[in-house]
Every structure is written in structure tokens, then in C-alpha cells.
Length: 84
Image (tube, rainbow, N blue to C red):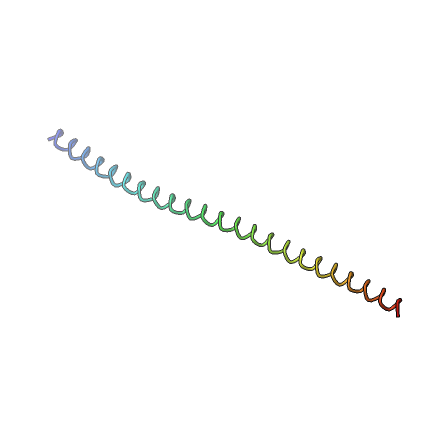
């Protein structure tokens, strides 16, 4: 009788351990999915920051180019006025 009880108890413990292992597997899969999603978000953020920096540099370059062209035109106008 004690042997049957011990076997039943051991079987019950094994079932609980199997359930725990299955739950750990599910948690591992969930954590892995979150880890991958976090990596994707980090890459997207890095790309967005890179594009924002390029856009700001382009805008600054366009402004400097426009200002320089205006300065050249103003100098040409002043020379023309002096000639008149």
C-alpha cells in the first residue's frame, strides 16, 4: 500500500513538474518575442534619429545656400547701383 502511495505521489510530482516546465517554455517564448520586438523598436528609433539628423542637416544646408545666393545678389545690386 505504501508503494502505491509513493508511486502515486511521485507521479503527481512529475505531472506538476511537467506543467511547470511547460509554463516556463511559454514564458520563455513570450520573453523572446518581447526581446525581438524591443530590438526592432530600437532599430526603428535609430533609423528615425538618423533620418531626422540628415533632414536637419539638409535644411541647414539649404538655408546657408539661399543666404549665400542672396548675399551674392545683394553685392551685385550694390555694384550695379555704384555704376549708375
